[in-house]
Length: 363
Image 1: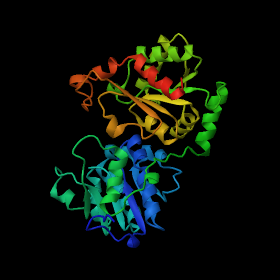
Image 2: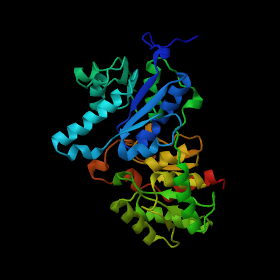
Image 3: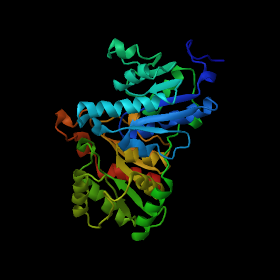
Image 4: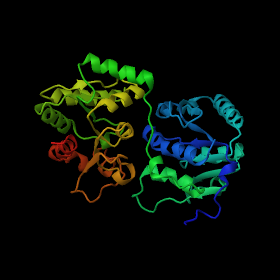
């Protein structure tokens, strides 16, 4: 029988844990298997979350999470005393929870301060060797980082548990996303308004906050027209951001058959519900792609400079389409030479994307 680490913690002593993930929407969603595994392996434990307020929708309604605490990104723009006030009130609220375990899932400096100020018996964080001694010595346990880019972020997050003696089962590794009644109702209202049925449309989310991750407008339009020619109805979505909405407008203008444009019209919860009703999701490396995987919708994901082994759809019903002609990818750079345009995406032909689409549609 295999044994865990020599300094594995006594799980029976853990009554309450705090998981800190101060990153973007997709990162927060990919951390949800950790909550599931903690609840399954530590009977009676309460697990709280600390995230940025704009990402909390990714966790709301998750049955494994007891409380969600928020940090507003806008605090840093406030006066020093006002910011300190917000921070201190947060610390006081967290202290009232009397955590036995803190799991910090990034290199954010706040994790070290929380580990010390909350005085948890056990504190876990990634083993970033380049961090200061103060940061590294703030944690009782540090988990090893992969020496290549071939470890998916779901497994990376779960390594925090492996470090303290918990081996997550396969059934505990699925991201959890709950649309909730309001999100479901909002999505149903949009479907009804456009005469769409569950499983009767393809969901395309071509935009990203980072333009270097996007496929060109003309190629998106050609894809939409090819799908329309085969009788598929396409629904496009984007965040309520002016650049993303303009991107959708340009795509639509190039289409012979106009797709249904719901850009900026859906909350995150409604977007999750809409994706769950689609027969297929098509998109780039973005939070909505991870959302589609979480709700069980088949995914075709287009990858350029980012790595699919680390960030690809966490689903067995998925296809990743990426260039074979650019050995430099994944480079992790914001466009070739930092120029915001990625050749490996710009040159990715529609035919390869359509092939992946038809494989998942059973054609």
